[in-house]
Image (cartoon, rainbow, N blue to C red; front, side, top):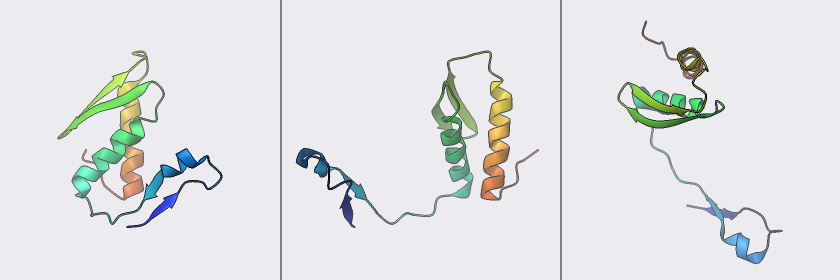
Length: 89
């Protein structure tokens, strides 16, 4: 495993930060796409994915007037297309 200092121009106390690289295991595609979807939805303004349990995603939203279901369905389509997956009807 290798580590690299973030910047040599930073003060000495800040050089303790490191970037670590390590081998990754191949995730189960059925689980991985839901994690990618939850993380993608976190990028929408005023939202945060709280939990992912099976087929249920719990999200926090600041603005209840937003079209939440439409936004989730659109993100599902984009993530599925990106990963080459087919969504169930």
